[in-house]
Length: 378
Image (cartoon, rainbow, N blue to C red; front, top):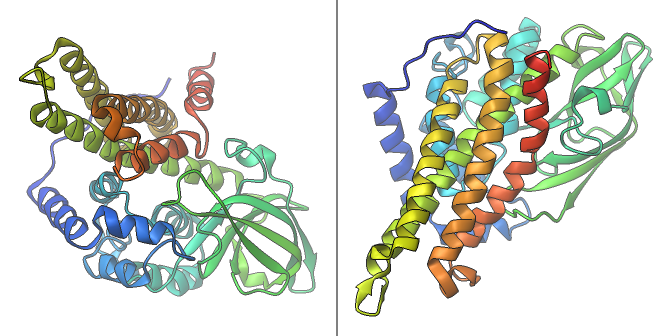
């Protein structure tokens, strides 16, 4: 079992300022009515808002200064991710900033880092990570897309499913099998032989696409890292994705808790606020316990991302706990809101859909508990 890394969950003054700035921006620029409009749009997010977020420094937080970033850590990035979940902010942030940027920074050549990271940092470049070919929890073992050597480059063949914002990004980070094993490629989205199809999803705030590669040619410089050495990189991307989703879930669950408590204080029946009834009190208390437990696991995971052995346990722990907590909070919130909570007009259904979607994304709670058992050698 990995040695435990001691971490401090308290936000620094700079992190608290980042939280307040992010929350205020999202409240002003991305209220629920804007989220609904974007969910119904073709791209699913607003590129002007995306650019505005980059100007606030969101995209550059965990990118080194040498590549146009701010040089902070995942701990700072986690503050933004939690606020995104609270506001249901839509966009390819998970794939671009959390997964792809880290992979490029970890195993990319100096030329690749210079080509991609500055553009990501200023919001001018977006990336979708194309891993899944079936169940989102399949991981590297389920990848069958092939990359055949052809001259100085490669030819990709296969189909990727559930590619988050895969229909609208600039670059696809693709996992494929080569003669040497699992490899990663940075593929321009407009490459010939690449067909992107947006697909309907339960959670319209997180758009997905199927991407088909039919003898799609890519240059030799598109190989990210060594040929056949993509497995550990994919594993790390999936762990970071699990942590990012856990933080998103904490933010959403907190909104559900606050909404439920406020409704309990302002909705009256039989001459009393319904929050004074024992049944409502207990539901809200249980939600608070679940949300605080989830926050602790997510914060811990966000602060050990540079310790691979600890992350192997902290990431699936956070994803399993936070998935359950968000589903509980969203479901209870609907019940507490009563008839209002079941209507399309109330925003709580958007949070319930996000809770269900993120619970399944990159593996549900049961999948991550299996990962925990494996990490413990069981």
